[in-house]
Image (cartoon, rainbow, N blue to C red; front, top):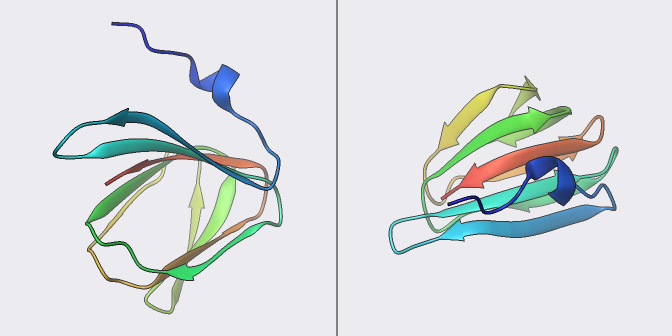
Length: 96
């Protein structure tokens, strides 16, 4: 079943979060972050997986910075401190 188009959903105005799919075991979220915006340090109640679909970020995980770019993948466990700084307009899929 066709449910949408990512290009049409991307909006680079600060930080936008859109749920694309949600079921009992997991949720898929499109997160768009405008250049220079920061998602402050926080934790997640579940394990998570991100896939960068556009842009460049600094992903800080447990105090270590990772430069992530289009097509990069990153996974982390629940309750681990992480943050994001967008170096360019960025879109990523968050699966948790």
